[in-house]
Structure formats: structure tokens, C-alpha cells
Length: 386
Picture 1: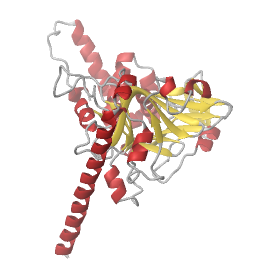
Picture 2: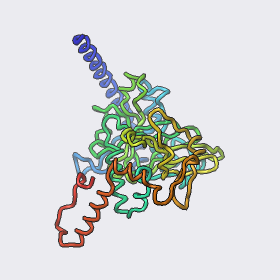
Picture 3: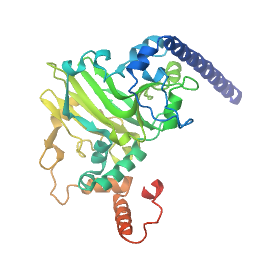
Picture 4: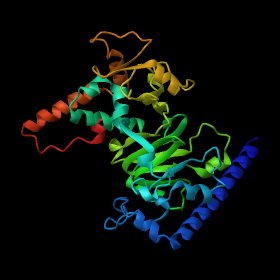
């Protein structure tokens, strides 16, 4: 039995290595073909800013690379062996260039409302921490956001177990470093195929677009080799969104709906790490046919949700009431507690995840130390902050 198991593992490993080599060769061929006529593409996307090359600090990263600038139609056509109809979706990196956008004249055909947009990390922090986050000063809010980024949006590697789901289309969400961004641009030892820009458009449905605004954000496919070898594995998510770790807190998600075609859209954040706290699935934004309904502050509508529950946009739109004056959301079947007890459960979740009171004491101690003669003290490390 041990010998048979070892033979099976060796066979799978050999198939994986062989398929990975084929995939890398395929991507290199795409790059070589595009380099012949890459002048127009590089000129059109010259405003793309990928920062400095981590290996050569005096050189701009990716200034002559075509792979990270590609829209979905090139990837879908060239890698059709790895991207089937069940996985395929469309995106465009030329959102700022109206005449080059893959989706046509988006500004006139689609309506992007400011109310139908969220700053992703802030929305997640508000959903987890509730009133302590909203009532805190901006410096303290940044600390909450740093905790969220470190805990629920981990650095990319394999699957991060954090997802963004929009009307049933799920994306793996992770943050990447500058070194990881550099390696993602190369075909060698890379089973992903990601495109990077500061303004990305993603088609969710013929009438719904998602706009991602964040410096050096990415969209594309994750682990296409693994997807081809194990297509029956439904637990893996092979659509991916990358956020650069230096700009993750500035990432903005905006929903655009085709004019004269009202749609119901629900943006949800799913994190397996928060399942034990009863907050695995959070509705960050819900838009209906009557207009956008921003519910990113609701911490109660999703209680009891687990990995077996499905929250549809119809359920969210019908069960949530938004109180703009109190800046809270409550469900129509929940009893509204008094002002003293409204955030008790949220505070309990906060202490279980990351004790915010210790964070507050740390900030107050740092502020008092700044007023004394201890200005020469070294700043606290990120580990000390957390």
C-alpha cells in the first residue's frame, strides 16, 4: 500500500511538473508574439505605475513588459486550454483610455454612483468593529484598518481563504508585496495569469461592471495549471484580485449598472478566519432597482451565517433597513437594543479577534510619550502594534 501511494504521488507530481512546463512555454510564446507589435500597447499604457524594480532600485518595474498590461480577451483566446467556459470572465486594463476600453463607452452606457462604491478595507473594519471604529479618531481608525489588512487580507501565496463575491461571482482576495508583483509579471515559475493597473473594469454580467481603483491592483486567474488538472475541485477559487500591500487600504470598489437596466447587486466579503466569530459572510454593499443601499455598517444581518448559508441579493435587499441618521443598519426581524447595549456583541467580537482596548491604550501611551522627553524612543514595530 505504501509503495502504491508513493507511485501515485510520483505520478501526480510528474503530471504537475510536465503541465507547468507546458503552461510556461505557452505564456512565453504569447509574450514573444506580442513583443513584435508591443509599441502601441506600451504607448497606450505608459501611465501604468508599477513602482521601482526591487532588484534594481533605479529602474522602473515592468516598463517594457506586456504580459501584466493585457486585457482578458488575449488571455482567454491564447490560453483556452486552461480557461474553459466555467472559469472564463472579462476584464479591461484600459479603463482610463475610453477609446481603448474593451467594454466601449462605459461613461455613457453605465451609471457609476458614488453611493454604490465602498473603500474596501474601511468597509470591512466597520463591519467587524462597528461603533468603536466609527467613533475613533482617524489615527486610530488607521490602526483598525492595519489590523484588518494583516488578519483578513493575508499576503498572497496559495489560496488566502478571503473572498469577494458579487452576485455569485467569487474572487480570491489577497495582498501582494513589490517582490511578488515583480515575480507575477514573469512567465517562469508562475502558474497565475494576472493583469495590473490602477483602474480596472470587470464584467460581472452584461448589465453590471465592477471598477477597482487602487495603485497596482490586479485581476486575473490564479493557478491555471491546478485548475486544468483538478477541474472537479469546487473548493478552490481561480479568479483572483490582488491589492498591493502599500495601497490596500486605499482600494475602492465601485459598481456600475447599464443605464435603463436596473439591476440588484450585492457585494459580500467572505473570510474563513472569521467563521468562528459568526462573521464569515458580510454584506458590504447592496444595490436594488430603486437605487443603491449602502449597508457596510450592518453587523447583525449576517449572524448565524456559516459556510452552508447563501445570502442572495434579494434577501439582503428585503431584510435590511438603513438608518442614515444613526449610521447603523438593523434587520427588520431583529429587536433594536438601547443605546447602551447596541454594540455589546460587536465589542465582544472585537476582543475575540483583536483586542481594541489594548490598541487604544497603546496609542494613548504613544501620544503621552510624544509629549514628554522620550521623543528619541524608537517607533513601535508592527508586531508591537498588533
